Image 1 (cartoon, rainbow, N blue to C red):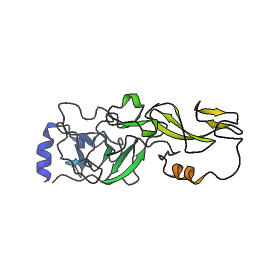
Image 2 (image 1 turned 180 degrees about the vertical axis):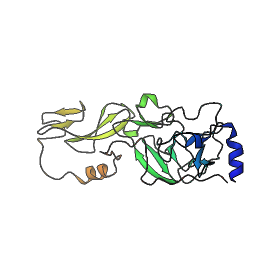
Image 3 (image 1 turned 120 degrees about the vertical axis):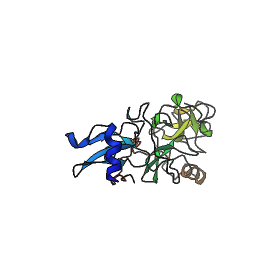
Image 4 (image 1 turned 30 degrees about the horizontal axis):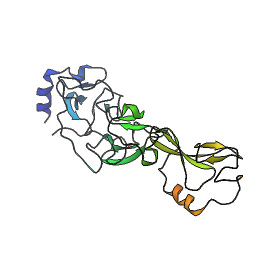
Length: 238
């Protein structure tokens, strides 16, 4: 195995003569050479990643292929994808199957669901959350079909309502002593046709039921890049 590695390495700079002791392969983005015991040994990056350079990337010098110009023509990825549930490769960031506001970060084949907040949608081309106008093919939330950036009443509530942002609703509450007017679709001084002065009584059951099934909006900023907490050693090529 060592002799095969040395023969293949004849076309690339010898890592044992380099200060970093590691160098990229000349043909394949997802392979690299490392000097071990005075010999050049070829390694594969974790499945889905490409070589970025020593001390770079998300693990062992390897990074997402789209993060930078790590895999430009004529170089290619030679290793085939190893897929798991929600993951096209063992490592990567992938779009959600049914949602435009969610996506998956995959680390060693384990998928973690992430959420775009603030009215943003997941952009498959950028592998990150983006403004809705930059994302093609995503339908707006049914609550916001009539006005992608308007207000929508919440059940029979007098002080809570939906505010649509880019076609996706966010739960809002009127300022103190104001109520939501279903005709003007804004918070006004009471009374209105439907609401008297605000009270401190519990909201009606139908309102609580509607809020319970509301679209989930996280207060945590979107995690566009998942670096993981465990950094496994790449597999040596057989």
